[in-house]
Length: 387
Ligand SMILES: [Zn+2]
Image (cartoon, rainbow, N blue to C red):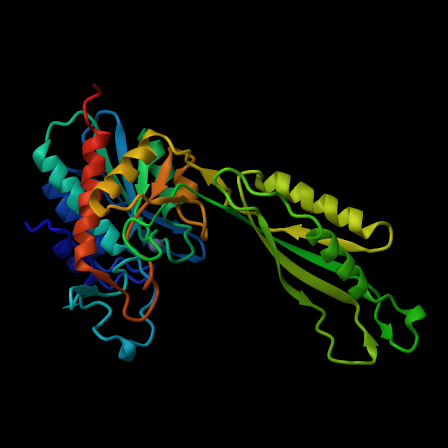
């Protein structure tokens, strides 16, 4: 079988696997990995009110150390089909670029992981460790029947990973730009200030909630949450909406609402951050502002994989292949790495993200080869006999 990254990527791109559809993508991976000697499982997870989702877990070898490749084969919808230069599920190549929904996010990355692992195993069939694949079909959707449950399922089977590479597109401009060694957490809160509705000409008979809301927001924003840490930017609180919803100019409204979201660094846990927010609000409110704070439960913790030997293997492999020493970053949104990091250190490195989720998502065929070579070098370094 052809196990070049281009063939694997093309085959995956031709599977219409818009979340929650499997679209043939996981079946394709299963057949390729089985042929190479992997033990492959296809757990399906369900949850009331969400569609069932298929997932894949595969392992080659039984020994340690155990390196896990993680990713997803589901993709976001293609959007207006007529605006695509080549069909979103065509896998067409033009001018050295492979087109299709998921080309960079992240069927292309999955193809490179597979190509690298298969090549490594071909050359080192009896290497002492294990290589695994944890591939979900529910990353772009509600993310309920995907990585979280798959990790739980694997844990239940006694699987213990030592390190993980998540192949999301991490490079802003060119292959080798950036590794993600952590991610910020995310916390959303809602504030309601209660007043009393009334006539603007008789304010003593009413209680306007808006000045109170202004005091609370001012109290939240006055001081920075922190000044950043060694590998993280400062945490950031954004007020995302303030609503009174009062259409009348002669009425004092009954209540005011505001929502904020915080992207926080490793100074905080969700609990410590909530405590700080509560403290600031109560200080700003004094005895005069009546309000409630509701903080939404979050599983988006901040995490960091410290730049250790494992991160070094990846940086070295990238530099050897591209000539670029990658930036170690913790920027951007959340990813499935936040779930995996509870089981083992995770580093994210994949393709160039520029066209992800766009019309004409595409990847340079040369990048597929180079990313495969990088993963291949990482495997060499990772499983090299200790000297
Ligand atoms: Zn993705």
